[in-house]
Image (cartoon, rainbow, N blue to C red):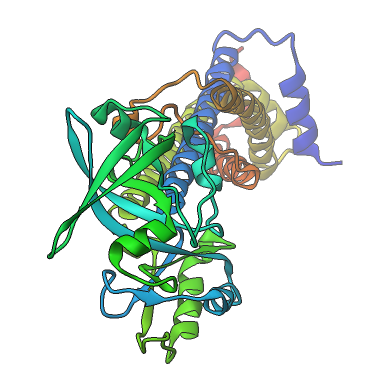
Length: 411
């Protein structure tokens, strides 16, 4: 039988112990551990949810990897079906799609707005767009004909005072002349990412190719979606190897860029959030540790007579120390239990109700996003337990300074 564990269980389960100091100390220590873990769980879930939500929004419009003409993004690149298949055959790439960009001006009788027209074809993955539609429905995009459909953002619609179903003129200016086209607004989207909502609208690939004076194979480039975002850097290297030494119909080479390279400021900002997480985790673990240290010292001092009696009966200092460490482990375990209940309760409440709202113009989301990562939460529990027990090793040596005769002399 493990003697220290047996004694610790008896002390912890003794409900008739009404000591005036140790019981409140135990409650405070338990609450300290619970609050610390709950804050850590909520922090980690918020940051993970926020990072993934913003990453998905950026990748939703810009994809994971972009392929352009090696000269510059403004030069056309010939992409046929076999080229798309070669992209998709690259290790790590899930899907490939063509795009053609052009600039123009949307104009109503009362206002005008400069925008980027992004032409997409039938192979374009519209999952992200469908998830962010607020009005109307997506048209069938084409690369062979067009009736000039247009998908614009909610903010554009508000600025121009238009709605779905309205027809709007767009003007395209080049060195020779000004061309006008009349588009039909089919749907409105809203991502709350100002850089996209204020600039990008979508139409047929065929329309943008003709506006740029290109043939059916010429595009601005291709967008690639990857299987695993965590392996984005390696997948981009694989794509570069695929592109190396190959040219298109017109002899143009191509180069690829990961989304983290295209929008470095966004992803650098997201990486800074990790520093905040580390600081909060460190502070919360420190709070839990110091609370346990103070609680253990109070418990040891109040049980001086019991320690002296155990020494008189032949118990070694190490056994007594282990007894109080086991006792502290029970307190920490109870605190971890309540911390998980409170922390996960808050996370689930926010996840399914969205009770905590945010300013979308500042944070790019309407409500605090939550993402539950079970392995990471288990790791938080284990680390909190180990660190809390570890910091109690030094205070537990206080029992070696308690003399049996002196401790039992006074009640």
